[in-house]
Image (cartoon, rainbow, N blue to C red):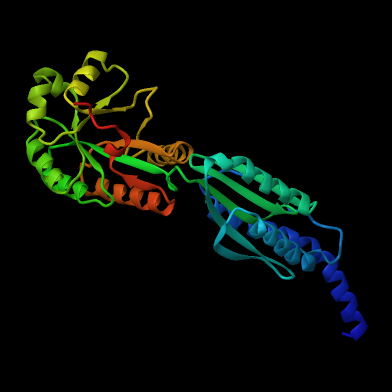
Length: 336
């Protein structure tokens, strides 16, 4: 091929491929955003295909100018991670920044964010309120360049979930596997079962929260008799919408906090270990991120397969940066 023909082919190739650069960048952006922001749904404008022929080369310097403005702002933000984005001539660095400020300084934070809009006409800012602060996504020409996470100094930095494994007491070996799970889960023990007392004693040794799993057997024999078979109980799990107020008062009079599983108005989410597990897990995760905390109650692990599923759920929460803590942390100590 002659040199002139090669130059013509390159020119045509550039004309064809140039718009595709933005499309490719958009695909990379969306993939990166899915990994970075898997816990929220944010809609940024579609990536812009600029008319300027030097737009890919000029994009990275504009990102750096934006970054300089963020770092010069009186927030004291620090860069937690940097990820290279883009392909071909269109390349830039996405940065995750974090800062902890007093809630009273919210107006100053908002003012800093607003200054970013005036720096470049292509800047887009989307703010997502979270239980412990805000998350600000900063884009340039529709491509994500910065994620700024703002934490309030008087709130924990990570959402928390309390997990209660209920309906234990029939199988000591399975109960032991549940009790040995890390992080610590609470055990809901059915009274008057073959191993009710042993499961309660074992849970106390491992410093797990012990809850009385209230049901028909407890109703037949009474609360005092039920508690005698579940040593160390500090709380109770009750199920459904038909719980009588008298029972709730009696449980609390015995110094027990109450976890209401399945009630329509309850903040507790039932999480099956079969059909519906994924939907329940997602619901609990959303609740934790929105309000800072959530409680999940799952049925007893009847076999090792159930215990294995719980290990998988705990690993997923850890990956999503959600702490699994003792359920008792969500309840005030009973008054004496």
